[in-house]
Amino acid sequence: MTIHERVERLRKELGEEGLAAFLVPRADEHQGEYVPPRAQRLGWISGFTGSAGLAVIAADAAAIFVDGRYTLQVRDEAPGDVFEYHHVTESPPSEWLRLRLKQGDRLGYDPWLHTIESVERLQAVCGKVGATLVPVAENLVDRIWEDQPPPPRGPIVPHDLKHAGRPAPDKQREIGEILARDGVDAFVLTAPDSVAWLLNIRGSDVAHTPIPLVFAVAHRDGTVDLFLDPAKITPGLIEHLGEGVRVLAPAELGHTLDRLGGARRTVQVDPSSTAAWIIQRLTGAGATVIRAADPCLLPKAVKNDVELAGARSAHEKDGVALTRFFAWLAREAATERITEVSAAERLDAFRAEESLFRDVSFPTISGAGPNGAIVHYRATARTDRRIEPGMLYLVDSGAQYLDGTTDVTRTVAIGPPTAEQQDRFTRVLRGHIALAMARFPKGTTGSQLDALARAPLWDAGLDFDHGTGHGVGSYLSVHEGPQRVSKVGSTVALRPGMILSNEPGYYKTGEYGIRIESLVVVTPLPTPRGGEVTLYGFETLTLAPIDRALIDPMLLTPAEIAWLDAYHARVREAIAPRVDSATAAWLAEATRPLRS
Image 1 (cartoon, one colour):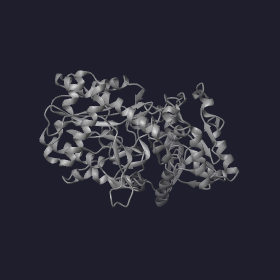
Image 2 (spheres, one colour):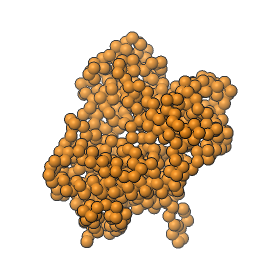
Image 3 (tube, one colour):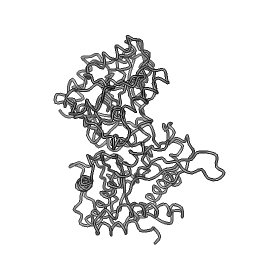
């Protein structure tokens, strides 16, 4: 079926169910960013393949809502004669629904695909206009998706202690103690990366992120109920989990929630990541439900010494692959035989040669010229553009190594850049350096630091419409909370051991995109003489050259030039001994002092 036909089929289901509209989020039962093919309902109904979004389909209208990363992509993928395009914050779904729903209308939703917070916002909108929010027992998209993929059954394997750095029973005890301290009997784990971290396991249910799509319930005595398909169990897994973990079938989750309710237990859930179905089931069974953050988030985010050593090792390997790639690109770009797709394939191949490599951490974003202005662009056979002189080329990529997860973006000039491109790039670089050099007191949040990365762009009346930094896991999710750097929403104080990205950018629609991204780790700093507060800063983990051809040295301060030269010296020292002589020679030129 075409997109038009799919939407019309869904509208027929609306009529049969007596619904005025139905919500189709880009989500699965775990409310995470990474969803298996079976849960790609938004992509199937609309054609939009981004990692976040929501469609509302009514009998006589349809709209799709995305954030600033996808405002260009959605117009390219979802047909404009079917869907209205909306920016999720500037023109939110609630406003669209408020203007279209009327007294007596019924708005349908799948309670497995929305958090309780989302449901309550929708109920408020419906209440204002006299409509009713209605949970549906069977997702309407599933009903018409005839070749929908089956649920994933990726094998689950132990994550070796030499990479995890801490035994799972220790983590289980810590979480149990947190629950007991807070007067909670149990916590429902719905985030797969939290389960993976807590039990030192990894899976393969979604592409590029080694998580198992499972649920668990952690109890205050340190024991855990793990709900998983028996087909996912591998040899040695049960022994690895030990006596403190009860392995149950997925169908037992509902019964376990019922028993907790029947025993009048106090059960904690994370309202931002728990499906409304789970909370509704607990409440209906009689449990006292406490809404609070996942207790695994902070312990998982603060990497231990073994994980930090692994991250540094992973970034050295990544630096080798990236340096080989950029040296190859410098040699081959002039031939005009390279395309976005072939370049991405070559970079992925270089990474695959490194030890402990398991996968890329996300599909490589390989954008030439105007495609680089699409923040989360993905090159396809239809869009594949040749990389030619006169272009800027943006490549955002990463890898999953057993000892760490990487994510890095570099922008390079193919041939001489324009003065405007140098100006914009240098402003982005200044913001990147400002964040990398930041010194801040204990208790500082990412929102308090975000302006450092934007100020050089703001000075010229420019900005970028995405966050400045996201957390990164340890052989887990390349996007990890709760730490982040953004204009709003970064309410968690940064702590030593947290890994984040530092990625300001600039995008000129239809012409080029610029982003400079490195991963950093929060580290303690010595308190200056006379100082009165504990200070933290960042150590840059990523080891990859920043294109000197795009830099206007006259826009940099002496301190910024010193930072860049010192960073390039680190890259050269770490990577040169690990590459061939021709690549080392290219690296020496790419990292020489800026004003040498």
